[in-house]
Length: 108
Image (cartoon, rainbow, N blue to C red; front, top):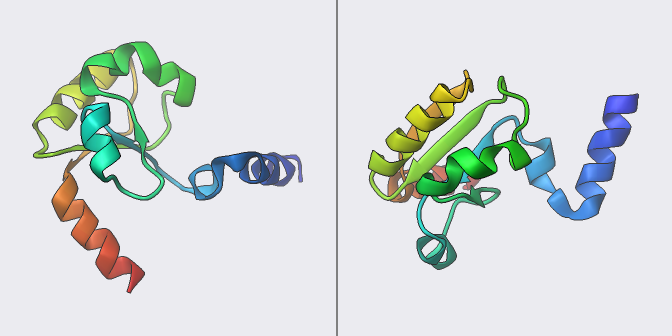
């Protein structure tokens, strides 16, 4: 019950679907790239800032984290950074355009 109330609080506080999602999606592109378009529910932490900012959004090092960028290269670098910090369930989900197409098909 306590967990349900916490999820409800997060949902009402403004995190919406992000709070209820099973995975944390992080767009590791620049803020400019993110602002031109990103996956629904994804947050932006540029790959070269992820070591300094990850704990604010994922203190749990066993959280399921999905990373993506334009091609998969920067998300691969971010993945290695997070693994070096002890995060164990990190995935390089690859390229934004491909993921966007998959998301669109899922929403049809």
